[in-house]
Amino acid sequence: MLDSLTARMERIQRALSRATVVPFLVLAMSVAWPAGLAFGQLGVLLYLVAFYPAFAPRGRGTTFAILVVVGGWILDTTWYEERVALWRVLSIAALTYLGHTLAALAAVLPYDAIVTIDVLTTWLLRAAAVVLISAVLTVIALGLASALAGSAFLIATLIGLVAAIGATMLLARLLRRP
Image 1 (tube, one colour):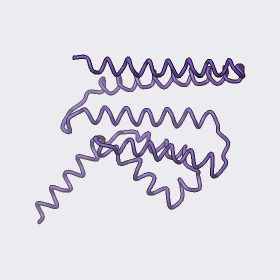
Image 2: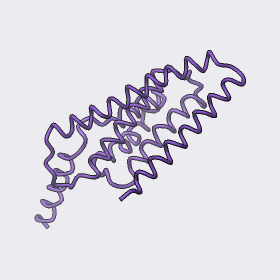
Image 3: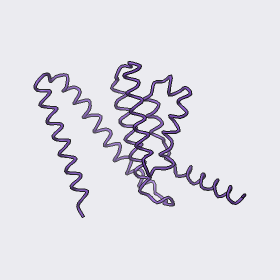
Image 4: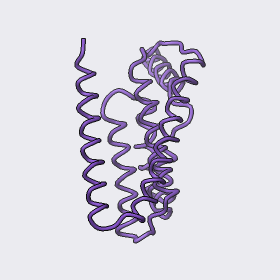
């Protein structure tokens, strides 16, 4: 019985040592949910959901945590009628993306892998570039949305939709290549 308990404690220690250093989904949960709920009794459950992908990156835990983050933001902006602020939208998008990409890195690595700091740095620099480019494009698109009105806005929306579908089809085709 003592051996079983020792083995279980060693597994917990290994899981803790593999956990993501900065739990971005925890920060996203704090930004997305109403403060009264995030830092109240419900907050414990929310943060358990956010921490779960750090211990088990393989599976649907990360997707579920991101859906809970988005659900909190929707709840805050609709039910609690909180104003939609650009800093919150950009923060939630950046934090969920960083949490997702780090969970993806952790999922493809073997559990006993020893990763150099260069691998993590390169991965995070690439993710930071995506976040920065996305934030800049979002601000530009919001500026253009206020300048465009009526049929011009509709045409720009349709062009953006076609571009998104085209990019998705291109990525799907590239992934199927041997």
